[in-house]
Length: 428
Image (tube, rainbow, N blue to C red):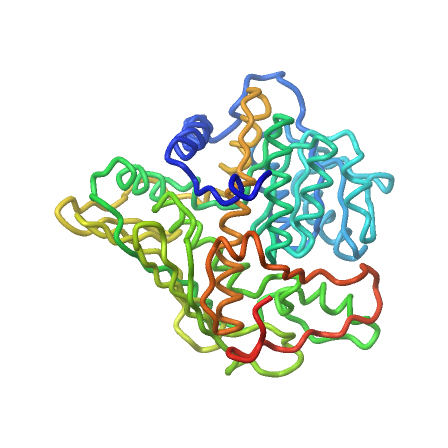
């Protein structure tokens, strides 16, 4: 894909096309959305942590024809613990055997080579670009957790994978469950239909209110690499920092509302409440201002600070009203005030139903380009906060050489990169 094509923002035409595909899947009933006897869906899971286990459960809940047939992870205890939990709930629908249980850094390759209808990728996001590329090259449909990359080099890889997936007619559905929730979908419909006028600004936040998400004390027998993978949110090369990993959800909603990625940003952040070396090299707070086409500005904030107020939400300011959305509710303020009062669900099952529908109907649903664009939105925000420097989308996409991946993947020494210092850390 050329630089111009990579840099093109989401057009309204492509947005409407994708929304129509998702709407068709959303219209299906919440149980088995396909005709009886239409065939089994064989699924393999790469990454057997809590999110991978949860995603596999969501996929099994999405349709009774789904079978979990293969699993892969770096660590055997993670794989076995996940397998035990899933098998206890779904019994014979879990047909994973020792021969289809794969361990190590190359386990994903062995799983992808199995006879599968869907590959689920739920490892720490630092591994995501190489896993997506391998699955696309093998011609596999995918469920892919967000974010899709932790640096611009990884984003560029995702964009190439997105193009390859389109050429092969593959479906790639991303774990952005808000896009499948009814309050979000109805509010976005009203925004895009022009009921609220033009979008002129917005705010998004993910204040977690805690500081030890997926954290555990290091054991003496763990190598540097094992420690970092087991405590992956604490290391930028694996998580992208919590700003990229968690706040992705909120800013994906903002990009959705505006219909574009940002054009530039300026951020700041730091590490004040969580300072010990046992917490790796991530920040504990961020504040970033994004500018979108037409001068639309959005304030983005995220934190992981114990004892602080927990809040995660998105607000979109329009010329004829304001919206507020969370995973629990959605409403509009202004002349056309409205509040969602229908049934609520997380969207975590619906996204898998959408993927299965796309595969069964032969109508590919490829969200990989959007995954890459929101990933770069977050990565450039973090890069700005780490360095204290303003930067533009075009530069981050085309010129940045930042690649956080380690020189080699093995359970051995891996020094932790220094904590960034705004104003001193160089923009790469």
